[in-house]
Every structure is written in structure tokens, then in C-alpha cells.
Image (cartoon, rainbow, N blue to C red; front, side, top):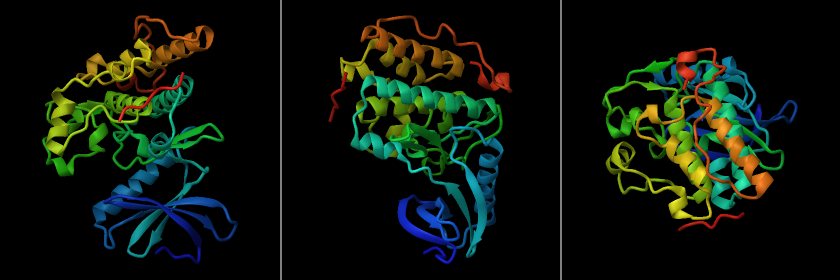
Length: 308
């Protein structure tokens, strides 16, 4: 348990193989905080360095839509990152308990796209974009992204073949190229694929690929075409279903090539919905190539019934 002389621990939020997340309060001023602690009792110097690097990335980004990091502190033989708590919960938990109507989906999708665009515009690839790393406060309408533990500041990076159990990223959301089995580099468009998986799950309540073992899941990402959202639920308009399928393209060149293009299509969908009560078919990706990125090479470019 953490030292409660400095922080009062209210609850354990989540735990994975590497880290434990607590919700707590700072004793001196009762400020709500999130405490992220390395799970290993005696972490290696490399694990500590990666943890410190994550803190530095968050501090350098310092943009709207990112969970703020206040401090990094020593904790026993390890480190602890103190993060802001704005009263949110993970998107994974929220969509597991709530159904999104089309307008709610589009509003959230636009916010997520904007945040991802800002991350890329500052020269970073998230590489683990998924509902567990998206925090939502539905009362405030606020969404923020967290967990930059494997993010990179490169416009692209090479990948090598790795064991399924040492792959970076969350396997259900990982892009084909991020598996290291395509002999091609990873760039900002890997996050678009993960965003597509997230959109799919937000609308349907389940993932595009459900596999019995990791090898089968990697094969699905590499070679299997997902059933479209509209095929699962005909109430989902064609343009939204097609937009998600474009994000889920196996080849990065077939996905959206810029956040500007994706936002343009999402805005058009929402305008159609609010104006006409439905979304008519239109050509996707017409505005793909405009970008405000500081790094232009990196930024080009059980079924659930849907409530209408």
C-alpha cells in the first residue's frame, strides 16, 4: 500500500501486469489525484527510465485533452506519477455500461480525433490508443487521453518481429504494422487504426475481432476483413460504417492520411444528422491532405441496438 502520510488512498482504479492506478487525495490540501505506481517491487533501471520518460512526454505535451502530470516522486524502490483527477472514468467502463446514440458517438468521436491530431501535431505517436486509455467525465462532457508509456517522438520507426507476449500496445487495438509482421515502419497512422477499433467498439459494444488466442488475433489484424458496423447493425448509417472501415484498412495508405480529413467527414455526418435526422451517403476522404502539423511528414495524410 502507498504511504498514506502524503496521500489518502480512496480506491484502486485498475491494475495490469506493469502498473497499479489508485484514486486518492493529497493530504495537505485534499486535492483529488490519480497515482500511477510501477507494480514490480524492484523494477529494473530500464523500467524506471521508461516510467520517467512517460512523465516527461506528458509534461512536454501539456495540451488540452491530455491528463496532466503534476509530479513524479520516489516511492519505496520505485517511482510514482501523480496525475490530475477530473472525476472521469475509462471509456472502456463507460461503453460497457451505456449505449451511445449517434449524436453522442459523433461528439465523442470529434473530440477524440481533435486530441489525437494535437498529439500528432506535437510530433508524437501514441501507439496504445484504446478505450482503457481514454478518460471520460460525462457530466462535464470532458474527454482526456492518458498512458504515454510506449509513445514515440519519431515521425516513423522500424519494427522487428517480436514474441506475441512482448509486443508494444494492447493486442485488441494494435495496427497490423505495429505487430512487427509486415516488414514496414510504424508512423502516426497506426493510431488511426486503433481509433477505428475504438469507434467500432463504441458503436457496437464489442470488438471487430474476437479470437481465442493471441496468434489468431494477430492474424485477424493482418489478414481478416472485419464485419462492418452496418452489417452488424443496419441502423448505423453507411457513411459512419464506411468511415470506420477506412480507419481499419490493413495498409496505412488506405486509411485517412490526416486528422483534417477525418474531422471533416465526422463533422459532415453530424451536420447531416442534426439538420435532416439522417446521414445520406457521400464520398469520404475528400479533405484528407490538409494538415496543420508541425511535422508534416508525420501528419499527412451480443449485439447492441443503436438508439436513434
